[in-house]
Every structure is written in structure tokens, then in C-alpha cells.
Length: 45
Length: 205
Image (cartoon, rainbow over all chains, first blue to last red; front, side, top):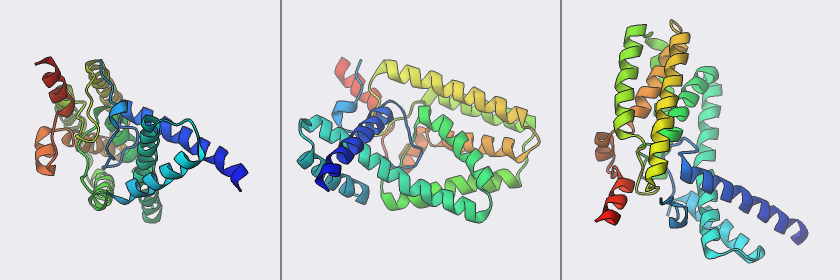
């Protein structure tokens, strides 16, 4: 079980990071509520 | 804390325990990504199934894609709580479809509504929120240009499909999304408009 758990969690993390970085640039998914974005994702000039 | 954030916090804790070399910052980003996914996924599933059951899936997809094409770049006000968001999303999407099916707009009405929407987008997009401020001027400019281009593309499609329900549905979807970027809507929803602009101004002082 543990053998599969780690790759699965790495995959989930990668997908989550992709969603987080894309949704910091634009309103990626179109529903009407959004969780609070971490400060590290706020783009500054 | 709403339930998507609770689930994402638990899942992030499991990830932190099992995957090494992840900084606090990366874990916060993973937590956010999971929360965004959960927040959207179950609502989208609900409205998609409802559209199928009501037999209006094609019209719903037109409304959804048109609304989303503009919202991706123009953003707009968001509901404060999880349980106000789902009824509001459902009301907006199905309202757009049924009004679009009932009311056929002519070229003049479509052009007038799009002109008003264009003026509002030019003035107020991108409309950020306290949860996700858009601070970067470059990003704001880019999103404003993209919003205008999306609006122009939607206008062309609605003119091309003139005389059909598609044209009306696209126009109403654009109208609803434009209303969601207006400062007055933010006031009514109890949200703050222009958080990113204010952060930028404070930095300059």
C-alpha cells in the first residue's frame, strides 16, 4: 500500500501546484467562491 | 473554515508526512490548489448533472463557456460562503439559459448590451477579491486586454448566430458576468473592490 501511496501523493501535489499556479494568474475555474490564496502566489512587478 | 479547506488541510497533512523536501510555502500552495479543485469540482458536477436532467445540457454549455471565457480574465465578485455559492451558481447559469431561451434579442439589443459590457470591462476588469488580489500592474493590463478580446470574440459569435437562442444566451451570460465585476455588486455582496490596486497604492506612498 505504501509503495503506491507516495507516487499517488506526488501526483496529487503536482496537480495541486499546477491548479494553484494557474488560478493565481486568472480565474481558472468559474464558480462563485474562491479559497484564500497564499501570499507566495501573489504576483508582484 | 469551509469544508473544501478542511479536506484540503487534511490531505496536505498526509502529503507533508509522506513526501519529503516540501517547504512550508509549497505545502501552502498545494493546500490552496486542492481547495480550489474541491470548491469547484462538486459544484460543476452538480450543475452539469442538473443540466442533463433538465434536458438543456447544450444550452447550459453555451452559457457556461461564454460566462467562463470572460470570467477567466475579468474575474469578479465571489460568494462569501460555500452554501451561498452553490445556489447562486445554479441560479445564474440556469437563469441565463431560460431567459436566453425565452427572450430573442435582435442585433440592436445585442450590440447595445455588448457596448455597455465593453465599457464596464474597460473600466473595471480585472476585478479581484480579498481572497485573491491582483497586485501586478503587468498582470492587470494583460487580463484587461484578454477580457476585451474575449468580449469581442463572444460578440462575433453572437452576431454569427443571430436569430437563434445561442445569441441571446451568450449575450445574457456576458451581461451577468459584467454585472459581477461592477463595484456596486461588490458593495451589495459585502466584498471589497480593487484590493490589488489598493495594495499597489500603499506600496507607492
